[in-house]
Image (cartoon, rainbow, N blue to C red):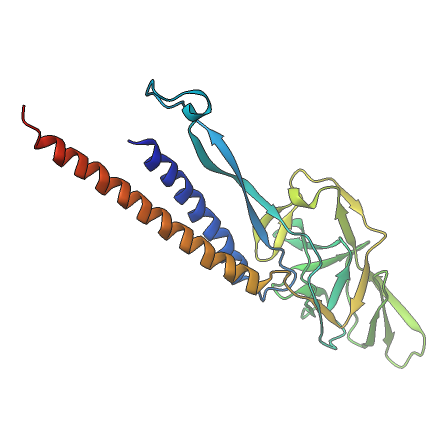
Length: 253
């Protein structure tokens, strides 16, 4: 196959995978705490051109290769909900939750109470405190969460606060190494975990997705146009090759 066709096909393959990444970002534009992914590309030098009339740098054949993706861990916008169980993290930390018997991490702070009074995520995963799951009593009211994550309540007719635990916030040396597990959860992967002391909690707020919807839609249109332009180029190359073969067939022996 001609080098031009191979180069064009390599670019189309990377564009297809880039479209998958963009589509996932757009689909999660309204997912609480979602962090956008972006594609990385690099030049890939393969075998040299084989014709002897190519000299110097003209003998190199440069393909396009998607090296992987990187995660934008920037802070998403805060949205006020006035729900005392909703919490948003200002900083780089993650909530620690218990999911399927293992510790997982999330930025989605839309919490609720289970039938047994345990603090849980919208998917039913238990929110972990520094001493384990946080449990409320049936007579608890006026829930308050301080910036450092300490959860206090008024119990019954009492006029003094009772502590129910402290929200556990953890950070990682390299958040890009966290593994996306689906359902807005992350696994630690090869990232080293440590207790966070700099991030703060905002009660009554939710962190929204950091996806720039307008930017992602613009990139989607750009990818589609690039894919179509390369497809047209490949078709022209194919037609040119076909025409050359037909004309050679008409040359007298």
